[in-house]
Amino acid sequence: MSNLYVARNPRVAARSLDGEMMIMSGRDSTLFTLNKTATILWQAADGTTPLEQIVQQKICAEFEVEAGEALRDAETLARDLASHGILQISAEPIVCGGSK
Amino acid sequence: MIGLLEEMTEKALARNIPLSVQLDLTYRCNERCVHCYLDHQDHGEMATAEIRRLLDEMADAGVFILTLSGGEVFLRKDFFEILEYARLERQFCVKLKTNAIMIREREAARIRDIGVESIQISIYSHRPEVHDAVTLVPGSLKRSLEAARFLKSQGLRVIFANVLMVQNLQDYQGVRALAEEMGVECTLDPTITPMMDGDRSVLKLGVNQDALRQVFRDRALVGDVDEFCAVAPPAGENALSALPCSAGHTTCYVSPYGDVFPCVQFPLPTGNVRTQRFLDIWRHSDRMNEVRSIRMKDLSTCSSCSHVGTCTRCPGLAFMEGNMRGPSSQDCEKSFARTGIPSANILAKKRSPANLVQIQIAPMQPAVPTSGAIA
Image 1 (cartoon, rainbow over the protein chains, first blue to last red):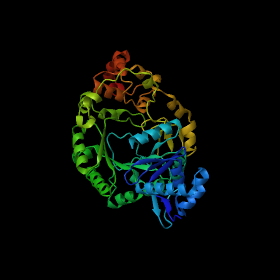
Image 2 (image 1 turned 45 degrees about the horizontal axis):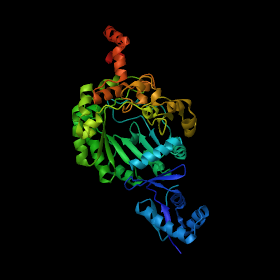
Image 3 (image 1 turned 45 degrees about the vertical axis):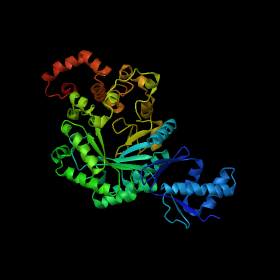
Image 4 (image 1 turned 60 degrees about the horizontal axis):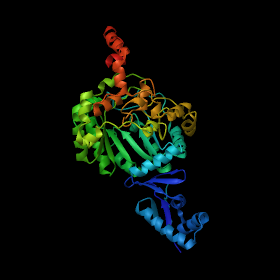
């Protein structure tokens, strides 16, 4: 059971380009693009919905993937995005998750 | 990052998305730069609510890079409200263009908190007597450099933007050295833009061929001089099918009054966001679509020019000369200075009897300052 919460970092710039998310890090202006799975995670990262729930409701509903495996992949992805300053992750709900 | 941005730009182009927009928040300014093309009177700037609505529309249209410029943006009392909305509510990647003389420690810290991609500051010389003679504001260089230091101390990316003119021709290396010393980036542009009302008298501030030739052979500026100054190979089908520039394709410009143009340097009105949706103008304006339809092979003189594959031709400057499909003489001069080979436009002008007539007539009509007489 994962207690991880994820929130979009309000300091990044972001725009969906035909379903593909463009993100510019506020830390060093590095540009990233997110694939479909990462885009779903990004858009659902409101800081209050647990990652496990996001995986079940958004990712497993979209892709034919086993829930446990999807959650492990999502955690890895969330930590990777957090290492670039794109997402915030916490064991507690994140109140100021920020922007739309 | 450049590679990824190019990739995203290609996608935006294919999907007709305006990836990058410059929005001038005001034409008012606290400097009076001798080369400026703007009318600094306020003729009815968009109100805060109008700008917020425009930002909503631009975000929905897919605009990612938003350049806020002017005039001087910090003269707007609602500037930080607009900046916060753009960044934190609508998640634009924001670039600022400013003279920075109103930025002190507090403003620099606030900009850092909001987060911008870069702040471009106009610096015309490293010497106060030269810079201040361009801005016509005593003490402006000192204030701008202090601001640059405040911004740098906040970890922000600062870029000095220098315009090469007769007045500061000797100082561009000094500006670059100053930028290096301060750890900021530096750009140099020899382009002088005619006034928005069509007055071309400011063009006399531009540097001449000899100076351009010298600048284009400065290794510190251009890198490999032989490569930079090389004559382009004959243009193939790809070069002739290419787009003249990104104006109207992935970029556009919005004035403080809501007018939408293909580019800040392309004053062809295509609609107004006060009465039309931004996306409707972008997609359906006949004028925008006309700009969008032009390929290099459609250009009246340039398509047969030996420089067509490498020229920096600006369609907006060509438009201001009277024909958006015609040559941009300033860029012809640059190609000539770079390679030593005159452009098709320069050769045509030399052959043109009309020019000879202008040269003869000009001294007889001193009260009529035509561009032909100046040239």
